[in-house]
Length: 70
Image (tube, rainbow, N blue to C red; front, side, top):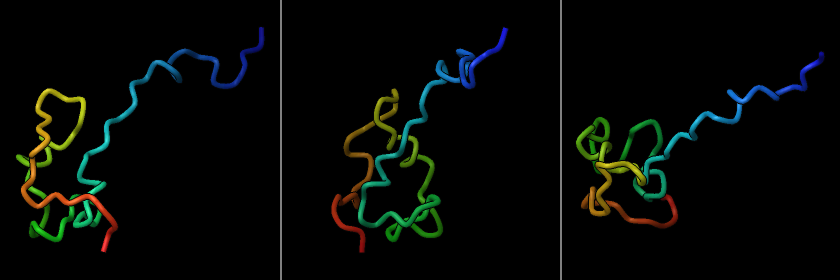
């Protein structure tokens, strides 16, 4: 009996990772770096930035501005 590639349910049952809302902010520079926080985004703010989680808060960051990245 030959199995087809990716036929095992473990390929499809894995939950998708959640992305931080910081990624849409114009001050975000990737890899936990932000123009407003030095040297990196504090974990207290980062924990609240994931939509769909219990800790999510829409007003998690006072500097968050959506738009074109500078």
